[in-house]
Each structure stands twice: as C-alpha cells, then as structure tokens.
Figure (cartoon, rainbow, N blue to C red):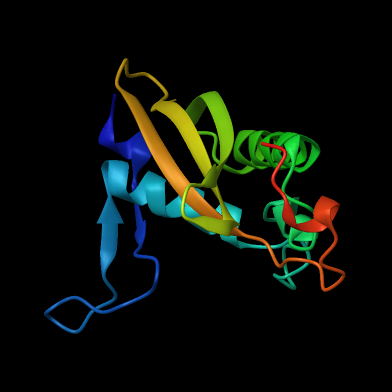
Length: 142
C-alpha cells in the first residue's frame, strides 16, 4: 500500500518534536491516533464539524449490561466506518474490565485497507454508576 494513502498527520495529543516543530505521526501510529480521536470526540464537540465523533458518550450513565455493550459496539462501528476510511473493521467486542466495574474495554479488530495485516485497538470507556445504587444499576449483566 502506498504511504500516500495512509499519510501523516499531527500527533495526538498535539506536541512538538525535538526541533520545536509540530510532531507528526506516520503510518499505523497515525491511523491508531485517528481512531482514538474519533472515539474520544462526542458529536457536537467540534463547532465546524458537529457530526464528527462517536455517540458512545451518550451512554456514560447507562447501566453496564448487554444492551449497553451492543449500543456501544454499534456506535463504534458506525463512527469508524464513517470517519476512518483507511481501515476495514473486522470485529468490535465490548467487555467489562475484570477489576474495574465502571470500565468497559472496547476491542476493535481491524486491518488497514490494502493490507492483510490484522491489528487491534483497545479503547477504555468509563461509565458513571447511578446514584440509585439498585441492583440493576450496579451489577454487570455482561
């Protein structure tokens, strides 16, 4: 695959290189940073591009259960298909962190288009438990 297709972009988070210029990311690192940026941005957060991002942020107060995991999976698939055309998403799984009841791991298995090199990215998603504290709000159904 040509390097032109993958390209280079500003590093995220933005920083400077040793020469004082804006640091750039290349190839696989640039794609991974781009994916993280899509997932970490809530729609409406960018004034000049209000549709950009992933709607998982609407689920911060949702209970940790199969329905929430399914909605997160769907939102991740939709946003990456729309905003990261350089990848083909093979699978997205959402699982609770074994030692943290308020963290869900979003495991994205993908490949860069034009390659046969499978890759994965694990993105942590943090939920805020309900103050009600009832069993449906705190127990995981996953």
